[in-house]
Length: 290
Image (cartoon, rainbow, N blue to C red; front, top):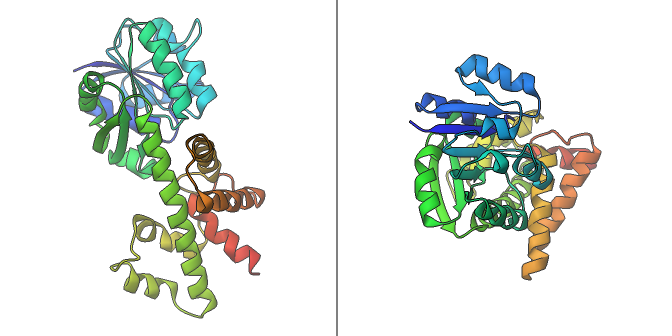
């Protein structure tokens, strides 16, 4: 059993922290909204820290899953930040952020005698709730080896891709691929509707062939039904794609489809769908063809 702090109890962090308790670890949580942390503690029997610094006291591992670069800096740095309260140990960041801020915080952690692993996740809310996340990691081999058994509490697959920042770069690849897949699926279902085909029957035929994908298997029915109040939000996808596109500028990568789909997601936001699932690209196509 390890002593673990978990910082950030959003739709992902809340169940992830719960899996750590189920795995037998002693868990203290911190959330910006204290009432949510207290609710989690009442459900799982863990403790609550009023600040990141308080939550991480004496922790062997600190897991973090917050919103963006600025949120991550705010829980790590400063007088009440996690780094100020850690005495060694390993900080595992599950937030999807830029590789730049990851390297910045790694360097600060190292100066404070703390190991740092960037470990963004894929699998969405359902993956977090079911303990079936895919976790892509960057950091030293020793830090990863120590952290991997903790991460296993909520992961079906966890892999180290390289040194600091490699996990975040891999997550960018993940989001680039998803953006193109969801747009392609949306266009296919839209075409089927306009051609007078039964979308469900079409998917039954093509899902077992080369066109099949996780997105098709898990999202086609809700897309056809016009239900998007679930899953990974468009606002968060745009945040992630902004990281992808900025990194592409820095590395010289060409991402024409990603840039185009990012603008389609902007259209979804303008439709009031910022909190809709990323499959809402289909709703955009329905709207513009009305």
